[in-house]
Length: 267
Image (cartoon, rainbow, N blue to C red):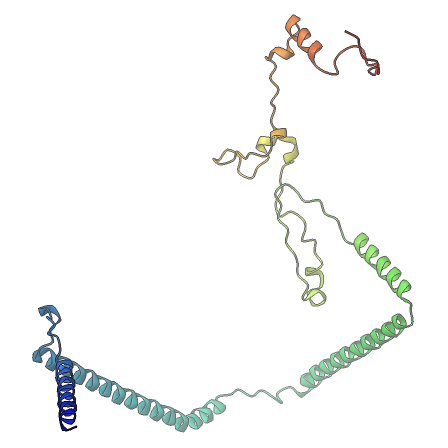
């Protein structure tokens, strides 16, 4: 029993010794070669630290300059507010007040303004009353009557509108929808009229009915139907024996127009 114990202890001792040697071997690192271009020496570390210190000092100076500029701006605003009442007082003293120089004329002008205001208010009130009456009238109508009335009004507006014939290459200008009532006769003008006299271009050949005739890039391909593809020199347009034989072979050009009979020819 003692020998077994010794062997066990020896085995255990040997096993523990192997584990310790493996741990010591795992701590060792493999040497790695670093090229000279990637080596970081002490001088480079010192230079990097110096650059960081300079950047921090620069940020501190900029912060102080911004703070100083803000203080100057506040001082300027306060100084301006202090001097503002004096300038306003001087400006009020320079005002030329002519009230009371001609009381009769001023009274007549006031009466005229007051009459215009009363007339304007009266017209607006009448307009509101008419709109309310129109709304009540249309509410009492049926849907068919409303549609018929709208159609008649649209037809009358179209007939009233002037249908102007535009000239060649004339542009369309819309007069807009605003200030129609305030503009008066200016907004009621015919803006579809041409701004300059243009010749009747329809009398010219089609090749000349362009904006800038004679300049380059005027040719435009439209369609084959717009081109004259008739070949008068072709053989089928010549009166001769060859054309006659060709016409006889063509379907639908023979003299007989009778329908084909149902009987088959026996051979």
